[in-house]
Length: 84
Image (tube, rainbow, N blue to C red; front, side):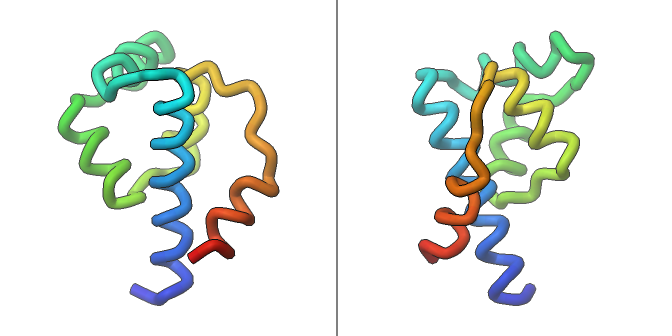
């Protein structure tokens, strides 16, 4: 895996974990939120995907929606990637 790809995966992990922390949400609660949008995923599978940063674009959007994220400035993503 290239260094650049590692940076993006790490950024995905950090963004998801930060949004969960802001809302004091557990992986169980996030899975419940995903289920409301017909995204069925087990807690251990979600935890594994997030910890590896192995999240597809559609899952990332579903996660943001399940956590009720209404604002995620693109600058935050750029900062996470450039911060490595």
